[in-house]
Length: 280
Image 1 (cartoon, rainbow, N blue to C red):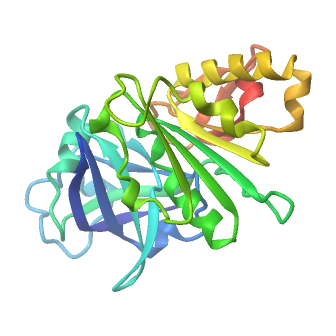
Image 2 (cartoon, one colour):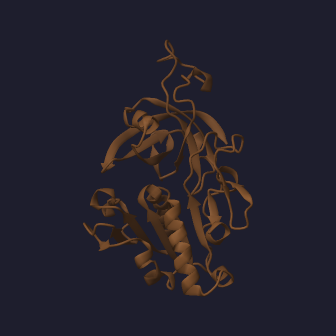
């Protein structure tokens, strides 16, 4: 894990209330893999420090105090090496602060954190990616990696309506995109679970990210389809959990959940990637 300031190179509204921010900090992307995340401090510098050459985490105001967890969205080459992006919805003070950042501004962060996706080896050719809402964020880097490795990729993108659908033209051209919306304004009307089984048999590995109700529904569909929890072991589903976090490093216990056996698990340290049947 590295800590430090990342320089904003781009920050634009991408669709609906969803923004994409590109950040320049090769140290904060070094060693990261799809599915990992970093924590961002969404607060201004203390008075008098704007423009200072040497800044640390202590240079930041304490309101809001807690960081915001953000998945690595995508990677690209920048002027100073690799840049990374985050995809975020504006839903509160922290993300509203992010939306106001301009190119050249600095954001304090620490990462990479957590367990990312385990990418398929040579035997896993067909990758099924399932995203619900902002859960699409970490799946784009995974899709990029899959295509680069010569894998066949299908991405199911579920949203409430057309305003929440990730732009298909930004998905790798080699990947197939399947869209579902709850109101039927674009794609197939319904939920990701309504089309999931159409591709599950084709897939060698399944990767998902979204809200907890989506995972609970996927688990129910899979148990009915496979007949038992034991049968589900034949094709694990890697679930990337969304959770509010205070630290991202296992200190605050703010992201603790319980698995199916009733054991406490820390999303930030033991996850955010779990096997779906471990939790649901």
